[in-house]
Amino acid sequence: MIKTENTVDKFKTKIVEHEIFVDTTTDKGGSGNYIRPHELLEAAFASCLNISIQNELNKMSINDASVVTKVNLRRDNMTDAIFEYQVEIKGENISSEIESQIKEIIRTCPVRRTLSKVIKFEEK
Image (cartoon, rainbow, N blue to C red; front, side, top):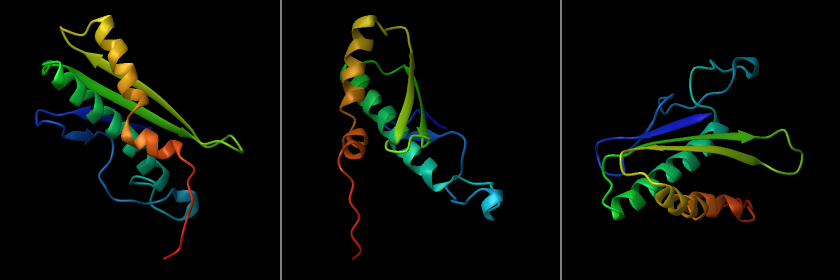
């Protein structure tokens, strides 16, 4: 699970739980101390969601909201990679209308659009 939070700096998003060192689990020979490769995919989507939401709120002149996004990549399905996500927005000016607009932003997040495409691999 990757959790992101917005910061005071515009569009700067903090990945809460990890430093950006990549490792694997101890049962696979790693130290288990750092972010795993699949978590980088979670981080990409969570960060994109957070930045996209901040951008939309900024357009609405809402600059004091707290944005927290969480993403979990489920790989237990044999045919699909399932990105489960949660979005939490707190602020004085967050109405149900604004939450509805944010849901559209979530659907159009650039990383989500990328991950929704057919993915191919080419060796160069």
